Length: 323
Image 1 (cartoon, rainbow, N blue to C red):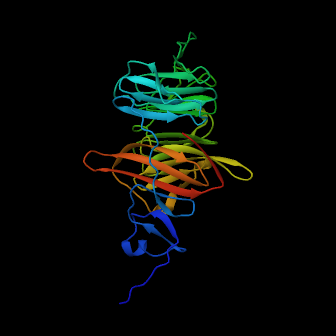
Image 2: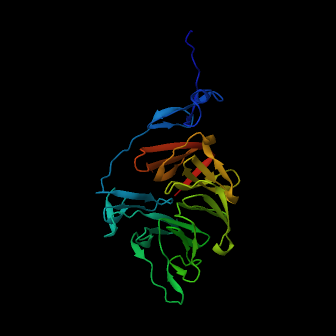
Image 3: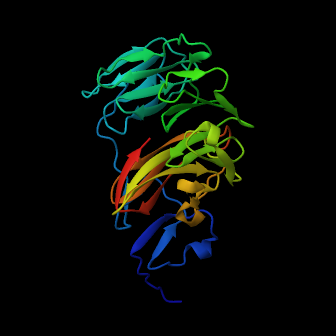
């Protein structure tokens, strides 16, 4: 049988779900890879070796939980037993020490303030000053300090903290305190995602994903939107600016691949559901801006199952990413 040349102009990404024959079928002039490593696909759907880093920063042992504010005002991370700020000259300033060397941190930016927490500590940083502060103890009856947890989020004038199975929320406009009589919603299992959109919160426990419709905890109408959970740490918010409106959405990883959550609890399976990676335990994710949205995620596999990473691209007009 004579050789046959194939005219392939587009590479769409990774498809590890379809049968090999189906995967190799050209779709509108392009095909999918079955497996790729350290490869980026540009806005013209051409594959390239992924760019490396310019400078490697060594910040001691067990560096983790690095996060940059969407505004670009501050970059924070934990290293060993210290909670630190990365300066513009790539040096670091210690903000809190000692901390538990196993603690991981969550962050949310609200105006000029960044709120941070782990399972051990909670506080905030005024980005105009750059120093950290703890929450003060309220003096009013029934008021207590707001707690932290594995996830922080801000939704309509309240700070929310996922602390194991409990979803705590602050007083309205008083983010450092909460009411001890009514301050939490309990869920069946550990919370792995909590992300705000315009009309509610996407929340996942260890079993399912829910949409809490409403602006206030007392108004929340919760309904299941997926029968699988989001992977802890691998959810990220994005603001898409179109011609007439901006829409805040949420991207999150599951064992069946990446989903996008829109207002009203509408969930869309990205990349036509062609990528899946089972046995993910925890991870991290960012949105990379540009003509195309690119979700970049790094996941840690459950013990004894290996490791993996992936990226996904969806066309939009203008993208602003936020964590």
